[in-house]
Amino acid sequence: MDGDDRVLHERSPGVEHQESRADFLSYSAGLVLAVALTIVSFVVAKTNLIWGPGIPVGLVVLAFAQIGVHLVFFLHMGTGTDNTNNILALAFGLLIVFLVITGSTWIMYHLNTNMMAMPPH
Amino acid sequence: MTVVTSADQADAQELMVALGGAGPAPTRTVVAYGFWIFLLSDIIMFSGLFAAYAVLSEHTANGPSGRELFDLHNVFIETACLLLSSYTCGLAALSAEHRHPGRFYVFEALTFILGGAFLFIEISEFAGMVAQGAGPSRSAFLSAFFTLVGMHGAHVTSGLLWLLYMIAQVAVKGLRPHVLRRLLCFSLFWHALDIIWVGVFTMVYLMGAG
Image (cartoon, rainbow over all chains, first blue to last red; front, side, top):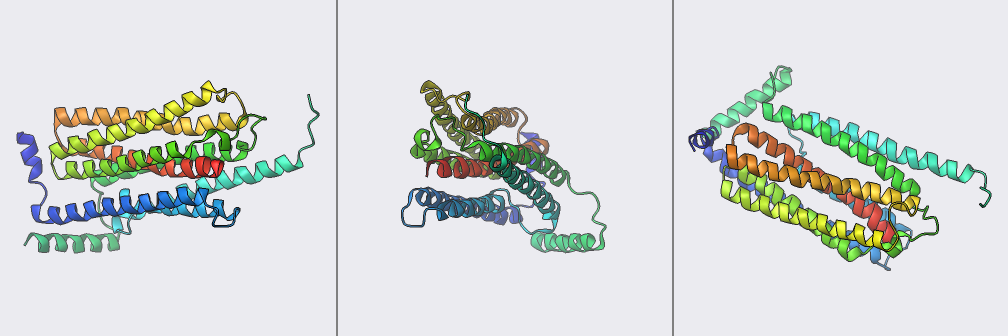
């Protein structure tokens, strides 16, 4: 218990209280937004109200929005000065993810359409 | 008085950063940054599996397609479980930061139960598919499906084991700074799993079944 008490006094209590409220509100706002986006995604996937081929585009947009909500409200990717390195690493990661996914699907799509018909076995 | 001092410190730190002489970052920042790099590499590994799934998802070899196999009600419950567990994990991290061990245990227990429920639904879905002859060896589509979703499930499983280990550490060592840093890494890991799940349920389930 001694160790715990010592740690307790390393932070200044006045500031701590405000941070706590802000963080709790951040997580709760994130949850509300993520739940809303999830429900909209599931509704959009099954809806007949919008043009069929538009549905995947809408789903991708909703997924990106939800990933953004997770990054900002749960992982706290803000615009603070100490966050620059995290954001730069994230941007580089996203570049690689983009190259891997679009590159693979692009190349494989063209290989598929240009391939000779296989004789049936 | 306290507030004025910390504001002054923040100003001084900002000035130091502007001058390019901020000095070494606190251990917590360095640890979180290193773990963030690991998470990004993990996400890049998943992007390879996503690309494989995107390429192979149409190749069902006359076997069942996603439209016949996926039950969106289950997927919605899975999504809800994982999202709520991410929230309770965040609240647990907050309780730990503010030295409330009681609340920490309650929120981590909720996280474990919700994560376990997610895993249970996923495993029963897999077992049901294998039982009706739609196992990973049936078609290229199903191989890619089981690899991608199974890899996410394996991450959730290791996350649950890590969570038990963290609860044990807090119980034995208390909420010391180095335990708090490990908890921070665990929270980042758990939130990242939820981000990958957003990609999975959108691309695999909603686009596959819609």
